[in-house]
Image: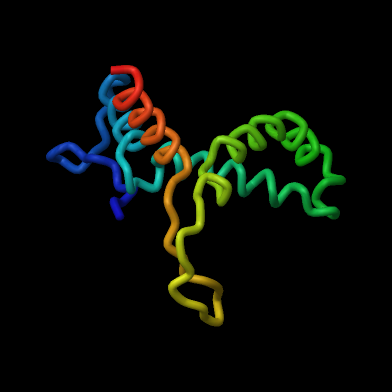
Length: 124
């Protein structure tokens, strides 16, 4: 896991030029494993939105404004994320106290494979 430490200059300071700082931020957001990676930021916003749905917190005006402003966006992010429906079960290989261990395949890969085979066998 990459750290969130800023890239410092040789004297230990953060660059003062706007372009250098912007490039540094872009690197943080685009580097997988960084705590500022785009996925981590989206997860944080969705988690914050879910925390705002707590009955006691929903009555606070600023939290209500946040929920109203970002609720639809958070739902869109959740809808685009990988889900259980994206997989088909092949075999259950274990059961334990915390759940099942399953062998699965990705549904869309099977669809693409079917289309490829159809094109290769029947169109050519």
